Length: 440
Image (cartoon, rainbow, N blue to C red; front, side):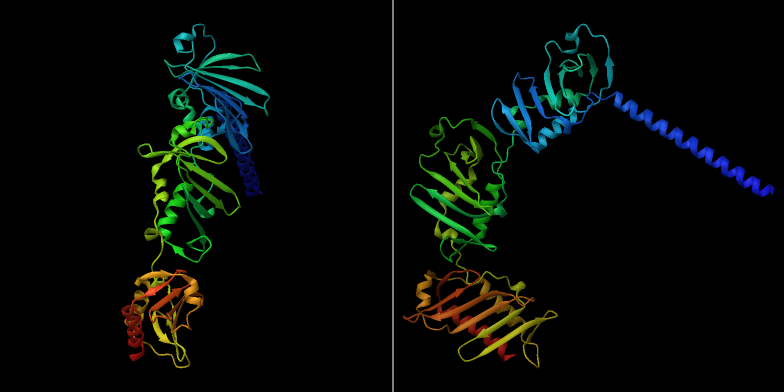
């Protein structure tokens, strides 16, 4: 009976101690929250701010307002605000932290507040209030007045708020992305240089001349496309396109039209190069913006630089199936556990180096000159067809070798999309590699 009473007593003591511990912990947390809340410069956070008017230390007035999930600058120009910069700006102001507070401040000049170093006016529809924040220059002191409450006071805030944040200018707050898309979304584009026109379209992982199967070098096209999509604005040279000719835009005509996967058409006009930058305008943003001058390279592209002369674009390491077909014979091999073997009921290994050499030679071989598809259509049935596949059974390339009416050798592949004439030495080397595989 005594043991049971002792257990009950211990249980009661534990419960009482736990209650007081939780009660005291809650009081401690409430005290911390109350202390933190008392130090808040504003009673709301950055997500509650709908519009801002900002006068920086340079005397510039900048105004912006929330536009859905983005920001729109409304004064002194109309432009897109840079969301990350503006969100960081407001995140340092609201709710803000005051380090010390003064209730009676008669001489504001001692705090650099007469006139103020900078001023921020915040509007919050949710809280139905407009708050004004003045920042002093001489000390990290801020004077705030609530327009809806009529109260005011001087508080000490951090130097980061008083200086770093308040030094923002119009350029810092603007969206400096030249385009609002990514390189992967651009499906086609054209380059206009005077009377000359180049047009390209994306085909899988490669680029082709528009209206044909002619493949162009993606190592030239892709960096230009992705670079333009990610281009940054280094300067806003003109706000209203009042005098584009002074920037050389349109004289001579140098423009690009890009089409995205969403069907959007983006037109860009380029002006005269100025050191490392070039003035440019694009549809949807009526301003002259300075971007890197390297994008002018597209107006100097030549066929020699663009057109792919390679026989095949397939990398040897991606090939796991190989077939050789002539009008009379078919031979095929596949890779199993890293070893090339014959296909059929009784698979046997073949000369590994001979297979690797043939694949490497096909990748490195190049046309002597290109021909039109029509010339190949009129040619006889191909003498040799080489099919390359991967481990999943997908066809990577089909390379066909022909004889033209004049007796010269030619070839076409689906990976490159180009057709051309080849040397007799190349054709002989391909046959020699095939024979080496068979001899083993």
